[in-house]
Amino acid sequence: MKSKYLQLFTTILAAGLLAAGCIPSVQLDEEVADPVITVATETVQASWEGQIFEIPVESNCSWNISKTDADGATIKWVKCDMAGGSGNLTLRVRVYRNGTADERRATVTLFHGDVKAFIDVRQEGNPDPDKPDEPDVPPTPPEPPTPPTGDVVNLTFDFTIDPLDGWPTAGGYAHVDGGIECIYPLGGYNYTFILADCNGASQSTVYWVPAKDDASPRLSLTNQYRYVGLPALEGYKLTQVVCHNVSLTTTAPKIGITKIITERARHPEESEYVAGGELQEWDAAGGGTYTYDLTDTEFNTVYYIYTHTKGAIGSIDLTYEKEQTEPPVEEDKVLLFDFSVTPLEGWPTAGGYTHTEGGITCVYPFDGTDYSFILADCGAASAAQMFWAVTDPGPRLAFGAQYRYLGLPAMEDYKLSKVKCVSVLLNASSATVSPKIYITDSIAASAADAKAFNDDSAGIVEGGKAQTWDPNGGTYTYELTGTEANKVYYIYAQVKGAVTSIELTYTK
Image (tube, rainbow, N blue to C red; front, side, top):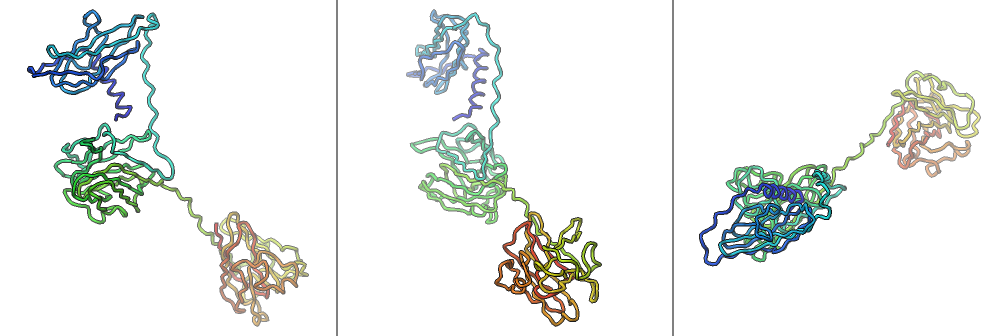
């Protein structure tokens, strides 16, 4: 089986030899008792443009070639790639372009003394002999091979077919440290295998065995310390190897998947096998299927089938997984708003300002971004008492009366996931009252609704149920779930309180 590129090379080489026309005749063997020469094809029909034919020849003697026309005269419009030969081989016969309108015939004769074999050459006439020859046009270069695509690639390499060109078919070829590369074309793409023995060995005995004695072809690992390097695919890692075994010897083969080729004749250490590629004992009679599910393999990396005891392979199924580019994980945004500092511009600093339905918006600049808070009371309240206090015991954000709300900044594409409040004493009179603080998704419509609010009321964010704060201060954390992005949530004080800082965590 030849790739189209090798066939093209063979055709060009043959054409060059035929065109040269200077191959010497063959020195004939001494007489054999019964010389025999046969050709597989006795008649060829060529087109007028010219053509090359490959004709198998079988013989038990050496022979020479002559080329003559119907009158017995020597001709030049038929060439052969050899002047003679012996034994069994393939003869290439080239018929050149016919520049006349007449059909023409010739005879190629293979002869050893009086023993002869004939090839009758017939060529059709040129339908337009007066048309000048067109210049040779360089062939269009082939499209570059397309590598495999997809998140998962499954490939099957069959070694029960005739050996491919470039693969060794017998043991004993010269040892090369690191092995030799062999190409397996599949689906329009060339895959590179590596046939190797341990480095420093005297010879290599990994080869493709042709069909013999009714046995199918196979990839033979005919000794221990032998390796088959599997193709590495750009952007993929090898995750599974399935080997289909065929009979080789009476010794049960032991086969594994390794990361390396060893130096000298030694078996790989346990750590040198791929995870999931540890040795398996194969059935010496053949016919078994052996699966290696590999983990911790790397992308773009060659791994090796290793024979601890010699074995043979009919086919190999390989599975590769593509390197996935994970989107970057968005880290939570954590913002700490400090209210123990001098009040910011635009924030109220005393109670009694006019009630505004839905509250007033105050801006807190932080790390180059303006964040909007909403200071509010329950709907239809007579006065608002959310403000930035400056009196003793120091600056703080005060819920100066019950039923007060602080709307927390909404962040685009992020949801509020945690609220951490540091509270302080509000004033001497409130020190005897324990504040009850919730996290809600809305403002109560009236004081009556706000007063009746409890842990079973609608509007409480999951994780935002009431915590009773120590009137003398403390730290209180609300872990929220089920929140939405781009939405305002509220700290609700059912009983008045105060905070010196609020830490807000937002999740993408």
